[in-house]
Length: 395
Image 1: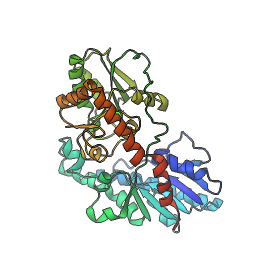
Image 2: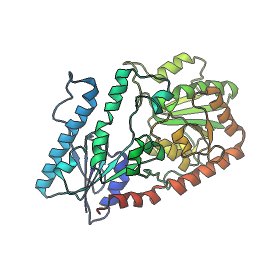
Image 3: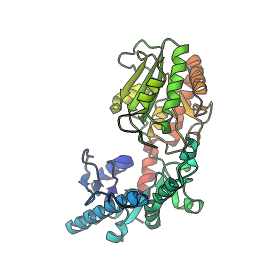
Image 4: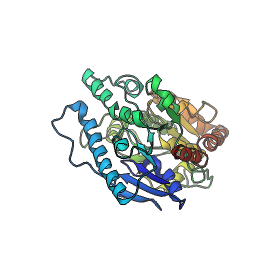
């Protein structure tokens, strides 16, 4: 079988699928992306790019769409070249909404097109309403227009994947039956508990609270977490907090150049003890795993938005998780069963729930054991990957 993967950010969610397909000598696998670095064993990687930048003077509503169209054109040209070389994909698996799949059926009309859909945008409700940010009428129209590329993809896909029920339910109700809910999965053999795990420099710390997301931003509750840290440090002099992730905003409203939420919170909370608050940046996989394994309590907060892989990693490592009582987290965590849920906006409540875990190690052990079982039963990649490959198979 000949398979083409399309994702602007290599390899994105498609790494395990691409490697599994490439492991079979009967398959030919090509991965086209906008990202230069990286490789996968057995996978031919190609890089595409738009022929020109987005037009500066174009209508603001259309900037995203023009970027998607430029990407779609670049992928069309790449596919045409592949056809001339004799590589005609049986299956194309594309990350939707960014443009690579827009014209696949024009250049490869007989392929099976599988789209991966992460988010349907809303100018009101869901994530925007939750953070209290009321969009102007102009911004609401702009955000709604961002769905145009998604809907073009959905109209031509032979199959549509989305990782959670919550994400599926952001789409209009009449479109939801088109989707297969199938999570990317977590490698539960790699992400596993290790009671002997220790963090460098914190070998003697009795209590380690961890927080790990891509960036330090309101969408992932970073301000609320930092206020909770200030309360916890005041009450527990032996507590250490480790924050993994980069000092930037990946989701939601960007800050002015030179500003950051880390900088803002450190200025707002001068009482923080920086000797017990450790910002470790984006960690290599092995160090990140050790961070989760050594955690006494792991905090994961999110507005109603795309669920982070980090929550699944924490589940698989058997962390005692304090998670926000928001729809995407409730799909995975049941309060007092495999974690504790807490109001997203309340730093005192977050601190209290963290303390409940730190004060009752039997509770922490029970929650961690159930978290691990949740990952193994419902989200283990070893179980989900065969189902993903089945969706890819030509009909």
